[in-house]
Image 1 (cartoon, helix red, strand yellow):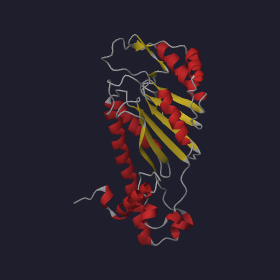
Image 2 (cartoon, one colour; image 1 turned 90 degrees about the horizontal axis):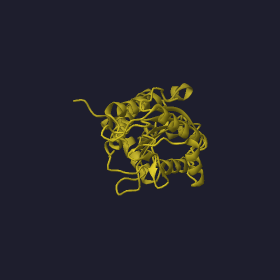
Image 3 (cartoon, one colour; image 1 turned 60 degrees about the vertical axis):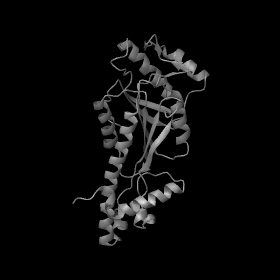
Length: 281
């Protein structure tokens, strides 16, 4: 009988090590193969790349776009990368800003260090690292699906500005040479700070006016040089009255967010409205 990912060799011990690390306050949801093999000193350095995936729980995202978001993640993430998943909506019971996943994948040994390891241990380590990739794909995918599955039109508010500020504050404690942010959201702020809706339809905003409001209320974030990719912009459920989005409306929305991110120490690389046709890079 074929055994599951988490039932084989080193990864069993790795799961226990990961649990111990969590208990010590070091968040890493991906079990470490090097720690399990007692080879922590031989672990290669990470890539310095960090992917941050942010999901707006108010967004009713079609299944094909959910799958597209997941595939974007899989195409981008490489061994040695760090990945974090956030979800947000508004400050409601059971609907709050949270981080359901955080972890770092490990790179295989190369060169002289690899040549110095006994063959049987090296084989176990390589197998564990392969299983680690599968563990990440499965676990991260499940957490993404839960975040998508919790989306509800019953949530009348969407705190996008607040969520981005919190993410900026959180990333301040994490060093990264490259930071990419995949934001899955309709990008329609609807909070006490302001609303991109009017009379149950998407409002034709004036970017400079809205940016002035954001500045006055101190809502710009510090996203630490992140390259931002948006998926789902302007998407509204079919049942929403007056859900039509004109080209002019979407141009204004994109112009606002492009400048918002520029003033939040980030760059908007692609604005999927709603489909993201550019790969993360």
